[in-house]
Length: 276
Image 1 (cartoon, helix red, strand yellow):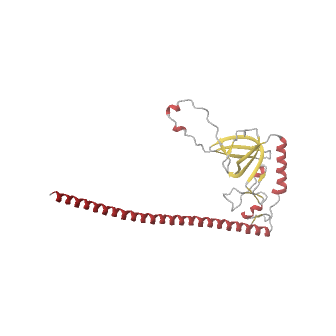
Image 2 (cartoon, one colour):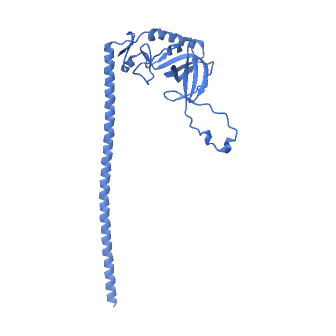
Image 3 (cartoon, helix red, strand yellow):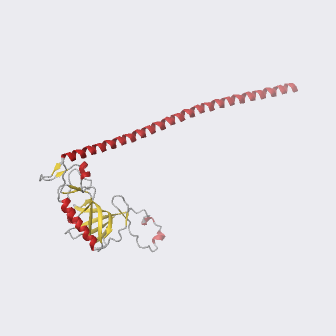
């Protein structure tokens, strides 16, 4: 466990995160609070950020789209939730599988081309399709996404979204967001030493179980390989025995053929002698 410089916050190891009220949840936040999230040493490259000592990966915001820009491989949406800050939402574009325009025949290049087809977008994690055509400036929307950093600023990778049709829904979200901020995020996350030890033992047990399953899978693979090798050797020995039998049968056939030819020749000689 690590303690913050001010001595007030304890940062627990990753095996404790299953007990966190934030780590596995869509945390309702304001854009201004998202920009207050911090990184911690030891969690680089995992896109885990901290509000106080709460680990956060997934966030949900409600606001109005104020800008939309298409760039290489992404569409960037700017969301304003009236918290005093805006936040960029990156939406991945699916990789195009169509033929490159440079590969088209020259005579087809001369023809009038239809308007360019709209890019297909996908969720950041599971790559499922996202139709973001409704997400234009002026649209009020709830977005859910994973956190990342771009040019030293927090950014959201879009996973899913829901259009907000009325003010009541928007205000309900704002109320829930405010309650969560007061009741959860601004209260430091605390675990007793007994809880930390229990979580550590649970993590070690799961790790041992995973290692046992991997070892069991390796043994199964090894036994299968040994069985296949044994079957291959058996087939090879059987083939060699059959080949030896074929060689013996061929030799017997050749000898029988030679005896038959000698008998025919003797018969011819005897017939010739009797005629004389």
